[in-house]
Image (tube, rainbow, N blue to C red):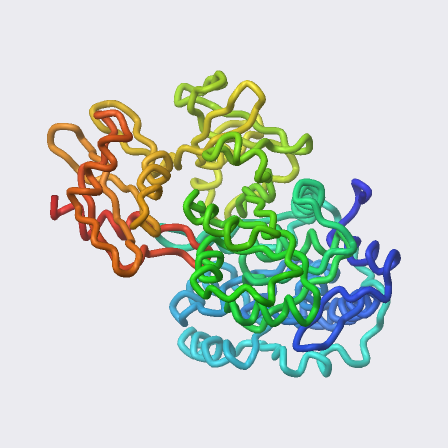
Length: 503
């Protein structure tokens, strides 16, 4: 698909050569063809090269727009390293990233500029802010030819900040080669085609938005429709207006779409790829019943590993808890706590090896060593899984979320799937609470649907009938919503603090 010597800019070059007039991005009714995107990113590369030396960092804090894409690929073509943060960051969060990276040049928009200005005022630094609203002027007059800088596939080109469920976010350093390999795997697994018209519903600052969806779409030569903010109504409008055939969503977006209840504009939609967090079987059953013409495909990966695998509806019907099997490009293995290769049916930590992996965490050698653990190249994802004889994986939890009760491991994903089968439960999260006798016991934070009358005792009885005694849920806490990261992952540490002292 691409040569081994390819770098990120070659994705655009290839698609522009194959389909120059095809729309690469549509935003606010305006089309940007592949030829135009290729040309403008070259101009952007020259504009940035005038400001920054090779290897310098440039920050991105803006909402989805063509300027984001042009800036991102312009930075890659200039030999710079882009640093991505959420446009919802507060000044204190942005200050943390600025101190760690030293970035003083940022691409911002009208909404995020005040935060950037306030942050740098507090830091006592005069920033170089490039405003997306005047991006055409920023590009104007610059050459449309490649910048005369040597860029290698193994060079870092991006630092993606993880949303994180504990502490400060971590900067994940990624090479050109790693994200190209990830994009190739995603195109093949999902799969994506040049004829696809795809809705970009999640922020490009998140790995799922840009590396699971948008960059693979560019590699496939597909058309990406940028939504101006997420809402079910906006999606329906854009599907009807542009003939959108596919979308990537996190499970909470699927839930919002179903709660809206109006699917008239979604007749042309054929595929929804979901990821970023676990989706309950109840949610998927509702989605397939409401949208029978749509195929729901789960994608699994992380910022550190890139795209790993997809699960098709056929695989899910065979085994509802399974997530699929990594493709042939992904070298993977499950390792037990003793460091041995797990046998079929035995729980182990999912490890991945190869050039698809991150380079490491920025200025965090201990965390980097904890991820790689040894010198043989395996990167440990923190996902606990078991494989059947055919190699199909079933996730059972995270290493940090594993509950140790009386010396026996209990895995939250199994209990969450069971509780979610109750008709009054919208979603739930299992977490550990301390116990003097057993060490830890499983507790559940539960969000019920409006009008539900189920009691704590009834849910405990429901759980007891479906699980072995040693791993029964012992406590139920009803909550209005679960605390989550921007990508939809539950912050279990925020559940443990208020409830651990009340049992």
